[in-house]
Length: 448
Picture 1 (cartoon, rainbow, N blue to C red):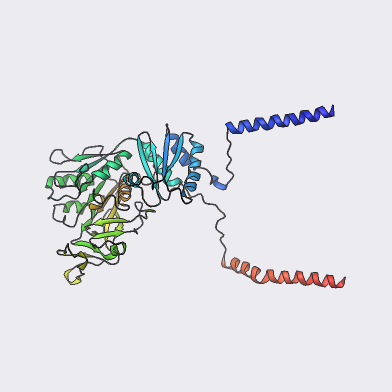
Picture 2 (picture 1 turned 90 degrees about the vertical axis):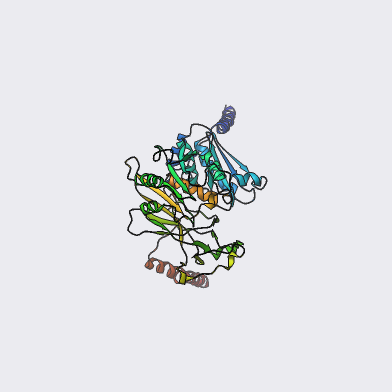
């Protein structure tokens, strides 16, 4: 009987092991025992995934060399645990450089997140915060209406000329942004449900009625993107500048910093470093700005004005003509009133909205519109910066505010007395203790 009992126990163990193996292949149980559940998604990210009622495709345009693919896969594994129909795939951008350029993929690569016919791009750093923000933008759905002022030689949102913005706007349309024309000679004021108005580098003076409509729109709490140029000072936009509390400085901003990147025309301002703002947070791409106008802030104004584009130490505002054949020969003439840099040429403005339907009003003024034109939008990070500007103006800059969940024991805080005690213990106390133990052991052995 004892033999049979042993065989029954062995058979029972084998069957139990097989059942456990079968269940483990069908079901997975994951337990996160880290403090603060740092190895799992934050509740805010889980709430975003619950809003997505269909499959989500994530395509990583990442080179197979290096550890970046494995790091991204580790981040995405947390999302797959919560949403089973989220799929991740990788594409080598070097195998299809044309498609990568069309999508604006550069630098360390990026992720394209696609959901319900729309897509969002996530660039470095690819972390939970940025990825959850992209998913939240997709979950919001609906089109954002961006109205482009027309009728006075402005850059066209659907134009194919070198100076127009057709390439940039066709790429951001896939993110749920729809561009519509706004001609004040055909309509009174800005239509309702307009999320943003863009005044993109007019070349003819604006009629007084158009300027008044723009001023009323801003005073009423509307968001505005104003792209101005060095030769746009006398176009009747003074009242608009007054209501925003900014001034467009005369002259063309020139900067010798571009020569370090083989840009020989000092009228092309090259930036690789940016003042801190939500638009430029963790943004490290190089951007090019041809024919820039410097800006100044009017003091004691109701707007909170933060510069996010600034020229280098070797820049100044050049007056008069510049020889197109030899632009590098331009010189600084302080006696003529030229101002030495660094000078700001991009302002982000915000204030409490005068409209009861909104909590905050935002505006951006940039002294150049060429950087988003069909000619220059593909250079460096120009397109990515333009997308960040639109996101901020449309209120999509920080959608999911994830709390910091770092390991609590990564940093040890010691007072000066504690540090002195540790130093004395390791450098003096511990060696004396070891010497004493060694001497005691040697003394006991001699007595034996």
